[in-house]
Amino acid sequence: MSDAGDASVPDPPDPPERERGDVTVLGTAHVSEASVEEVHETVDAERPDVVAVELDESRFRQMQGGTPEDIEARDLLSGNTVFQFLAYWMLSYVQSRLGERFDIEPGADMQAAIDAAERNGSGVALVDRDIQVTIQRFWARLSVSEKLRMVGGLALGITDPRTIGFSLGAGLGVFVGLIFAAFVAPLLGLGETLALGVTDSATLQYVGAGGIGVVGGLLLGLLFLPSLENAPEYTGGLLDGFSMRLFAGAGIGVVGSLALVVTGTGIGPLEATTFESAGTLTIRGSVGALAGLGLGVLVGGMIGIALDALADDPEELDEIDIEQLTDGDVVSAMMEEFRRFSPQGANALIDERDAYIAHKLHALREQGYDVVAVVGAGHKAGIERHLEAPDSLPPMESITGTDSGRRFSVLKVLSYLVMIGFVGFFFLLLMAGVQNTFLLQVFLAWVLFNGVFAFTLARLAGARWTSAGVGGAVAWLTSINPLLAPGWFAGYVELRHRPVNVGDIQLLNDIIGDTEKPIGELFEEMLDVPLFRLIMIVALTNVGSMIATVLFPFVVLPWLAPDIGGVDALMAELLAGAENTLEGIREVIS
Image (cartoon, rainbow, N blue to C red; front, side):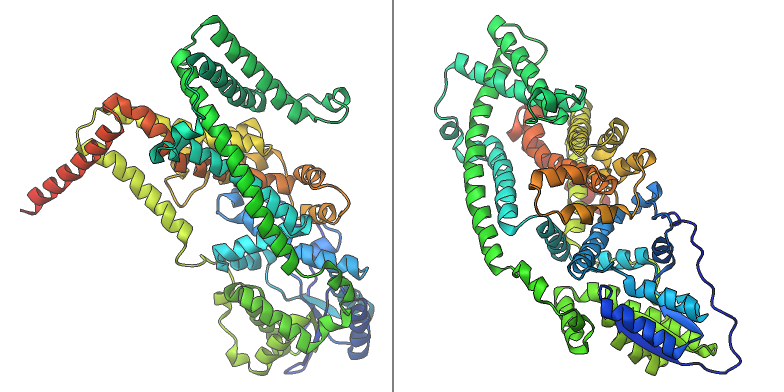
């Protein structure tokens, strides 16, 4: 991260001539007007040498009007930077909502402490851990399910559970239906059933031309056609430039494909047999997609309705007494609830920061300063406990720096299995004596298939040509390397041209806070925010590569297998490679 502006970080005054000072810990709610008044009254009454605030340098600079921090492009290559911003965004959104409810700027208590210190001639000490370290350690400690629940909670801030249920159900239903119809149904003997018994060659060619035209045309519109900025004027506001581009591409593709069928012309692989096969696949895919859509909407809708019934009443927020947010029993209950959600996350977000702040306050006390520490109510008990028994404090180095996260991760295991499977596949074919030309074909197909999916989804998320190109170019490698992801590289290049900073989080909070706009319009506005666009680019580039990796053995290998005698022959070669490998091992051992 780059510096957050030019606001100077305060230095404490010279140590007083006393051996040991005293620390008064004041617990506040960051969105409470009463807490602001209490801060002023306490500092005025105590007149301490130093007022310590629960801020780090970057948040202090931003609060003092400095420029928000930029995300450095190189930070993306470290892994989870963008997704840590999701956690930061979630926490910020909750605080922003509370601030709106009680009509006070979040962090007003900290600003009041700084103002009171200046008024009384006290020094100011920043005693909180760097927010990026905290968020990194917090995100690393969350399990996959906890991360999904956090992202789900953020989604609920945009719309209601029913809308999310119907939308996700529809999207996943169509995707699963397509995959089932295209690749699973034939294996189960359901291919002809889903094809509705259509066998007429001419009919299948026309249907196939339409299917190929739509898919190819959409890619044409997405990747090559210019955006029509005046499209809303010509379509009465029904279509924006991006949608018009896709429609134009699909139209060109369909007309071109139908022209080839009508005239009996073949261009490369686009010949009669190709269109006929595509026709069968198009019918199966359409039936599968429609069935998946219906089932997905039904299941997703039922889940959404159930979640909506179980969700807390939004109006309960209006009934919260802000004074409860600083009440010890209420705060303790809230902290325990968070610990039940994520014990390890709570450790990084609460316990470690309690210890870090206590370290800083203990050091000030040992230098002879009298200190009033203004901290969130949830930290008060933990800090005071450490100050009463400084020997209980963990070593400072154990609560600073980055965290490698959980040792075991299902996703990492799956990633390593993919890598082992990929290497093993080529090794066994090599041991079976398969021709190098076939191995080269498989490798090039892997590179191209991964690249097309990653590139296309990156462009769909709004990535620049160069960013999407880099993501697509490295997708083949990153999909077999669990330590890398193509989205990091696409995001790296994107950040070279499109600056992003943490101030975008407040813009996103403002957009989400508008409950009157339809979700489609909200999503479009969010895409205009650089941080959200970056998150989408990184995420969709990775998703594209993941989809390609999953589909490759079911889509590409059967297509290439005829070169060595079909799928059965391919499996036989793999078995032969395994036998040859075992034989070679026996010879070495003996």
